[in-house]
Length: 340
Image 1 (tube, rainbow, N blue to C red):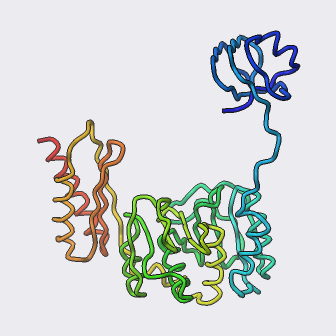
Image 2: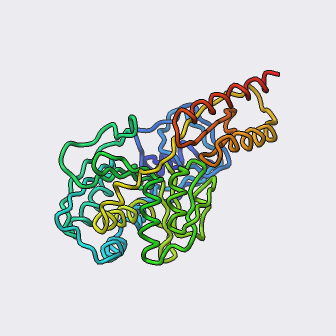
C-alpha cells in the first residue's frame, strides 16, 4: 500500500465527497492510475484525479520521515567490526565490488581505518563465467570481495581463484573453531560440496544440510554455495560484512589456507527433466538415490529432487567422467520409467 497525494483539501472533498482525508496530501504528477474504482478500503498510492472513483475510503498522507537506518551500516556496527579482533591490515590491498554505494563506502572506511589499501568499484555484479567473475576491475589487489546489492551474498577472489559460499564456509569454520567460538556443527545446503564436508570433518566439525538457511537460528555458522552467509555472534545474526572482516583476518594469519581451500573438491554434474504433470515419484527417487550412491562406493553422492515441475539430478564424484556418466544414466532411466 502507498499513499495518495492530491492537491488541496477542498479539491479532494469536491471530487470525493464520501471519502475521509487525513493529514496533508500532495499531488504526485509522475504517477497515475486510470479508470480505477476503489471502495471501502484504506488507500495508499500516488494518483492523479483522472477517471478515478473512490468511495468510503480513508486517504492518509505520505510519511515523510526517513526510514530507520540499517543497523548493519550504523556507527555502532562499524565500531563492532573495527574491534572484532586486534588485527590491522598494513600492506594489504582489498578490492570491493558492490552496486550499493552505502555498503561500498562503509566497507572502504572500515578497512582503511584498519590500515588496508582499499579500491572500490560501484557497479552491478553480473555473475561468473567458468567459475570466474565476468567483470572484475583491473589492478593489483590481494583480495577482491564481491557483494550483491544488499550485502546478503558474498564471494571472494584471491590469486585468480574465486571462493564461493562453500569455500568461505570452510575458512570461517576453521577460523571460528580456532577461537573456540564455533561448537561442533555448521550448516550447509544440499549443494554444499562433499569435499568441503570432508575437510570440515578433518577439523572435527560436522556438516548438517538444510533446505533454507534462514530457518536456522541456534547455530553459529551457515552458508550456501550461492554466497549466502549467516553468522550468529553475540546473539545477533550477521552476514557478508562480518564475513568480509573475518576473511581479511584469515588471509592475514594464514595465506596458505586460502590457496588450499579448493583442494580435494568434488565435481558436481546437474541434469534436469521437465515433468508435464505432477508425478508421485518419491519412492522411485529414493530407490535411484540409494542405488547410485552405492555405485559411487563412498566416493560421491547423489541428490534427486522435484521443484516447479522440474526433476533435478545432481551427481557428485571425485572424477568428472564418473559424474557425467552416472547423471546421464539416471536421467535416461527416469525418463524411461515416466514414459512407461
